[in-house]
Length: 111
View 1 (tube, one colour):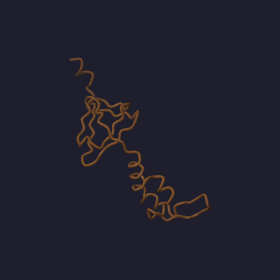
View 2: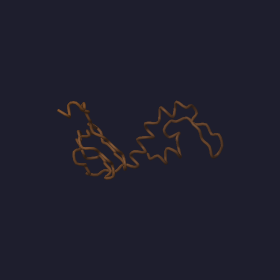
View 3: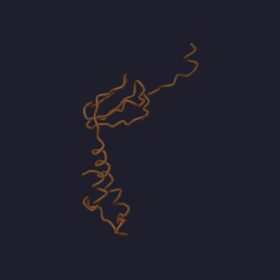
View 4: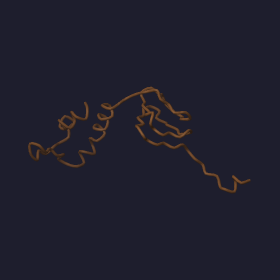
């Protein structure tokens, strides 16, 4: 089920609704939105899901690379670790991921 279908028929997910008017339908209780948010997010993810093999230099990918997507415009620092064992990832355009950095005291650098 995609996000448009969920929006068109929220009751299909078991989300109780109140019909405020013909144009406005609201959740009967706010906590129902939270309870069903995972279903909505999963449907949106599946609708937009893309895969590719782009892996920036120096990226440590600790899972199966298949089924995941990394935008070529994502700024990923060498040494960054993506650990999605048992799942897949979607790293969108212009997202910035930095690797682990351990700062050295200035004194240690000057020796």
